Structure formats: C-alpha cells, structure tokens
Amino acid sequence: MIKKLLSCVREYKKPSIITFLLITLEVIIECIIPFVTASLVNQIKVGIEIRSLLTIGISLVLMAIVSLACGGIAGYTSAKASAGFAKNLRHDIFNKIQDYSFENIDKFSSSSLVTRLTTDITHVQMSFMMIIRAAVRAPLMFVFAIIMAYIMGGKLAGTFLVVVPVLAFGLFLVSQKAMPTFRKVFKKYDKLNESVEENIRGMRVVKGFSREEYETKKFYKAADEIRSNFTRAERIVAFNNPIMQLCLYFNMIFVLTVGSNLVITSMGRGLDIGQISAMLTYSMQILMSLMVVSMVYVMITISFESMRRIVEVLDEKSTLVNPENPVMEIPDGSIDFKDVSFKYSEKSKNFSLQDVNLHIDSGMTVGIIGGTGSSKSTLVQLIPRLYDVSVGSVRVGGIDVREYDLEVLRDSVAMVLQKNQLFSGTIKENMRWGNENATDEEIIEACRLSQADEFISAFPDGYDTYIEQGGTNVSGGQKQRLCIARALLKKPKILILDDSTSAVDTRTDALIRKGFKEFIPETTKIIIAQRISSVQEADMIIVMDGGKVSAAGNHEKLMAESEIYREIYEQQTMGGGESETNE
Image (cartoon, rainbow, N blue to C red; front, side, top):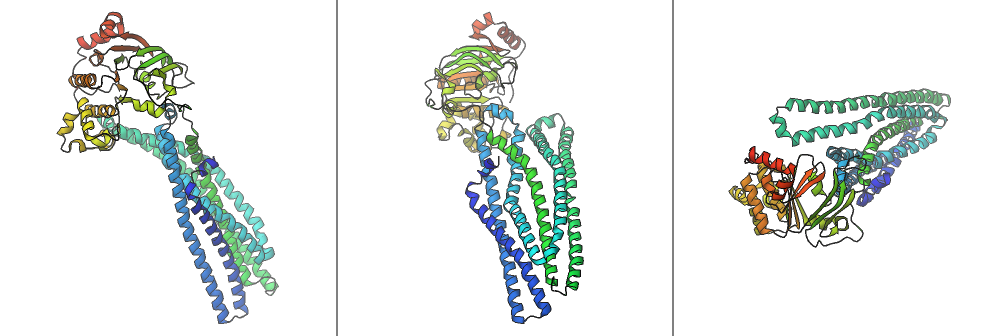
C-alpha cells in the first residue's frame, strides 16, 4: 500500500529529499545551541572577556538564524512536496475512475468516490507533510538530545530512563483508544456526502414535496454523528497534554533538585549551572519530540484508513479491458445477440436478461417496448459494452464486441438516455462533446435533425447561449433534443435512444424520427419508448417482458401475435395514452 502511494510522489521527490536534509541540519543546530549556551554560562561564572563573549554570542545568533532559515525553507519545500503528491494522487484516482466499467462504478457509491477524492486525500496529504517534516525531526531530535543530555549531565540524564517510558506508554495508550473512533468517521463522511449529493440533485423534488425540513434533519443527523465521533476521539487525544505536562514538570523538579544538590556538593566540579540549564533544555526537546511522535502516530493512524480507501480505488481492476490485438474498424451497424444471458453481479442468483437471440440488420430502425423492469435499458447497454454478457455473445458488424478496441466501439455507438447530462458551457461547447472538430454548420444541421434549432435560434445568444450545470436553464424536452443532436454529431453506426423523447410532444417526436429516416438511413437506430407511436413505424419492434424477448416483428405482426403489445396499444389509443406531453 505504501509503495503504491509513494509512486505518486514522482516529480516531487526532490523537494521531499531537500526537506529531509534541511530538517536534519535544523535539528543538529538546535541540539548544539544548548551545549554552547551551557559553556557560555560556565565561562561567565568564572569570568570571560568581552571579545570572547561577543564571539560566542554572535555564533549563537548565526546558528539561530541558520536554524530558522532551515525550518522556514523546509516548510516551503514540504508544502510543495505534499501538495504536489496530493495533486498526483487525485490525478491518478480520477484517471482510474475514467477507466472503470459500469460494474466497477456500481461497486463504489458516487458519494464514497467523492469522499476519497477530497477528504481522504487531504488526510493523506497532511500525513505526508508530517512524515517528511515532523516524523523526521522528532526522532532525530530525540536521539541527538539524548546523546547531548548524557554528554552534559552524565548520571543526571538517568531521569530519562523513567520519564521517557512513562510518557511513551501514556501516549501510545491514548492513541490506541482514539484510533477506533477516528476510523468510524470515514464511513460517516460517505453518508454526509451522500445526503448533500441527493439533496442538491433532487432540489426541485424536495421543494415540490415541501421536504426541506426532513432533508435538513437528515443532513443534521449525519453531520452530528461526525461531530460526536470527532468529539469523542479528540477528548481522548486531549489526555496527551496533561501526560506531557506531568512528565515535563517531574523532570524539571528532578533536574533542579538533584542537579542543585550535585552542584553544591561537588563545588561545581562534577556539575555546574550551565549543565543544569542545558539539561532542562534537552529534557524539553526530548519530551516534546515524543509528543510530536505521538501526534504523528495519531495522524498517520487516522490517515491509514484513508490510505486503504484510496489504494482500494487504485487497485480496482476494470472488468472491461481491451483485447491484446483489438479490431480497430467496425464494418457496419448490424447487431446480433447470440444466446445472451446477463446478470449485474456474479453473486446474483437471477439473470436480468435470459436467452436473448436477435438479429438486426445495419440501417434498420428497431423499437423496444415493455413494462418497467423488463430490462430494456440493460439490453442496449451490452451493445457499446458498458457491461459484458454473462453468457453468450453480442456481435456488431459480425464481430464480438469484446474483440473491438473499446474506444473505437463506443465512438461508433451513440447513446441518448432519458436523463442525459448537459455540462456547464455554451450550446456549441456541449455539442462538441459529440465531435470536438464539428463545424458550426455541422452543429446546426444536427440540431435541425433533432428539432432543437428552432428553440436555440429563439435564444438571444443563439448557439452561444450558456448552459448552466446540469442544464437547469433549459426544459426537459429541450435538454433531450440537445442530447440527441450531440449524439448525431458522432456520426455513429448505431444510435440508441433510451426513452430519450419522453419529454417532447408526439409531433416533435415524429419529426425527429422522420429526420433520422431521411438523413441517417445507414445508421442502425434503436428506440426504447413507452409510447407505441414512437416505435409503430419501426422495421422491427421488440417486446420485452421479465428480461426475455416476448415477441419481435413489425406493428401488424405484433398486433396479431403478441398479447402484451396489443394490450399496450389498446390502452394508449383507447385510453388517451397518446396525449401530448408539454415541455
């Protein structure tokens, strides 16, 4: 895990190493200063010339300046290294997620991935900075201070044999008690982000049902659980300070009492005032370094859970990979389902699709109709290989989709979903998601085919109209038509409309289908719809029921042979199901 994370340091190795060297120099100087100060005190006691006093004083000032400079520069280099490390980590995780299949994405909730990209990486970044600064400084300070304390204080330094183990044990005990609580917090963060994400995405629904108070309480509960856990953990960690103070004052009393007695009894020959002052300084450095080690341990332990969650994302293998020698060209838009069965997880007992056998000629218009949960969307998601079949094969252009290069396959298959996504930017910028090199004329032509040109031209800024995040400043029907135009710019061999004209009226729906028939006759068009009128004129209509193909054929054949299709048709035509949808 550590090796995987350190691979993200990359170009920031240099500032990390520089930080280590600067911290080492800073610690050495800080340990030398008390030694020189003790010597100065002893010389002042017996008498010292002004010139010697000034020389030692200037050397102390210079050492202090160099130590300060080392600390300041180390602060800059450690910040640069840790921020760069976090940047690389975010980049690697985001890139990894882009390669995920839908099955991989289903494994992680979106709120959990957001937490890992934000909170978890921030914790790891702070730990990395503490490791290259405090985790280097504290042990070095501890070792050098212990050595200097024994050089200066001799037997008096034996106090550390008592104080250090007591402090180390106390800090370790506090850390162990706090860690389980810290670990629980991260799952609570996922719930908090999930609450925020759901609320913001569904703001119109929340306001429509006057559920603001309910959502506020739900968010408050999630936030309060995090507060409660952090409070409990911080209350335990707060014991670090009194334990530290206890050991510090015990050490001061011991050094002053025993040291003063030694100074008096030995008449300054065994121990002098300078050594006592140095011992007090070294004892402070030793105990503070242990305190810092404790805090670093707490921070690293907190971050350990974050590290595990981050590496879990980095180690996840996409269930969809390119073959060794992929096919780079799709001959045509013909589609074949050969004995296809599919389930979303290997652990699932039931198949979402069962025993599907279909042949669709290139250029055909195919309608798919069926009740909710009949796996209509699941069927078409297998064509661009958003999921892989569990049994059987799906062929495009006579070749198994698993033999194609993924990018080539998906570039040749355009999907328009019922709830498709528009991105913040102008209409032109959104259109160029379909083809980044599309000319203005091509964009206008695609919008005409999708019946979007009329309302775009009515906007004051036309095709330069800015679309808000999520397309909130256009209606549902306008959004669907823009998404259809974007898909057309891909000039696909296969166009899949997954209930993507549900928000437009029947007249506009008919005009869109007429445009497809006239301008993209060679493109295979698959239309999933709830309205019979949307698929009635299709070359073939597939009736789905319970994950199986119940019937297939044109309108006349299905009216004669399919009870399900006939029932839907009669309900919609005789029961007013064909009434127009208002935008």
